[in-house]
Image 1 (cartoon, helix red, strand yellow):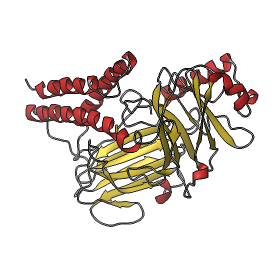
Image 2: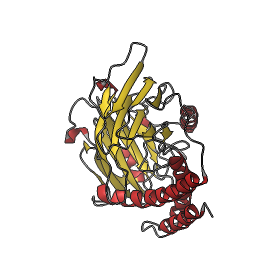
Image 3: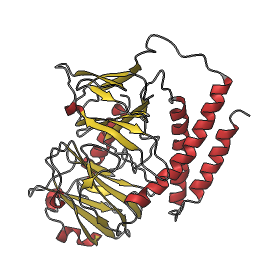
Image 4: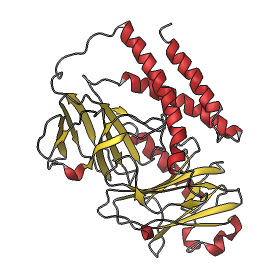
Length: 387
């Protein structure tokens, strides 16, 4: 049967989910099966997009195909490349906070992160007054808007980052291979279909293994209920720093993260499940960026991570997760971040919040305003994901 390799991969992937070492509760396992379904969708999409002669941009990760602690504020795309071919990338700069590009050599695997040969944001290229731009990619050298591909270049990744979900608009981006533009690919064959199902199966298993191993490298070797100083984000991102950690809390415990509101154009925080995925950021406030968060009069942002509702604007909902990953990101930086730019961590009981949280009364929010806030998130993501 032509699809048998993919069916076998699904069965193997289910065993990976069932045997994941972090599973403790029925919720953990149910979320794992949900992750499996999303990964199956993504593997099929990725395999059928593995087109280097007639390339196109495809969503790398999104609300329903999550992987790799996806940032709720970011749209992710990628296109596949041949290092000896020439490509043109054309687009229009939107009104979002950041637009970055990265040429990768290789793929994520359970043993390594792909190298980032070239990583830059739109400040490094010429953009016309009407917001349009055009990049060329190929083996040779060129001007400011040319990217020289190395012998092992395989992919171009694009990230667009939102600050104000309701009002910022995404740009456009497209790619063409110079020597195949205006022609058509060959008709599909059963051999090609068999290969794509086989590749999709390999992608599925590798994806799950990789992102279960990934946190071991960067998170779980850290002391619990702590966060690192800001540091350059692994993987070659040119202007991003991050601070990471993981928590383990009871329902009566609260974690308060205090961080200066940054001068960086983008600053964001999120929680991630033990599957290394963003929590539900559409229907719950499991993330906040500096535009969304309430800053206190002293210039600090205080995030309150709690299972119980404290009635505060900066409540980060745990949504039943006793353990989760913590991540701050700063992007489009023009300077190195220092330890004092990063977060401090305090643990306290839920009942201590009114006495220990500075500006507690000023941070209160009514149930009606909270409901409106969640409705705004739902509407903004629904509109953004049509782009």
